[in-house]
Image 1 (cartoon, rainbow, N blue to C red):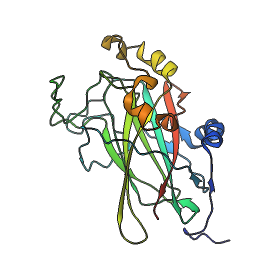
Image 2 (image 1 turned 180 degrees about the vertical axis):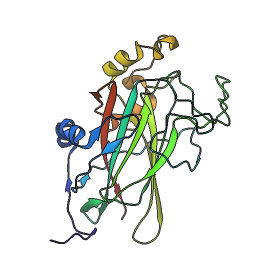
Image 3 (image 1 turned 90 degrees about the vertical axis):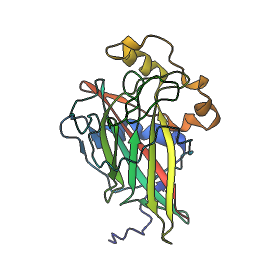
Image 4 (image 1 turned 180 degrees about the horizontal axis):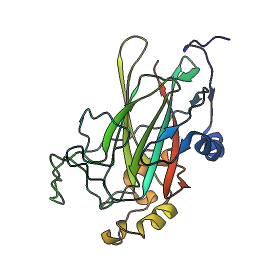
Length: 246
């Protein structure tokens, strides 16, 4: 049996197919372990093309390679919040063929439980966290196209639904670099439940639901909602995404 990376060893799924398989795939691939995250990759690719979304003002290319992004690397202080094991399974779609995408860089960044991003000075003077690097990092996809991060369930801030930013960077067959940037969202009912507990509850009420978020509504956010499930004392989610390299 050929093991060539160029072989079409995956399948192209509709959004309905993916949602139906999320539960089983998440249970098989992701095990929540805050101190040592584990992912057991499957060899099959799952080609689901997702919508790109705006990068936003808070991306900083920290070049911080790590899977556990909860802490600030200088102080080692962990950002408090419900643990979230977030996995990406990245595939490449070339001329209609689907295969795992290895060697791609996946960046993740998001706000803490109280809506603060690290290493930024907010334009509305809500915070100044310059020099800190919590809840940021990147990983490189393995042969199965998988990366995993240990983080926390995000908080919220004015004008936005609960979300996580991510960026996938890779080189195509021609050597041209490809950047894909988008955002992940959460079920509103789950966010209500998580944010009712400490430390999120100190933020008070005012979180914007997904449907009221302009970016979610106008940039097909319904295709970017995570199926986060309870795992021990936190949550886990696997997100399938294909990058079109042709």
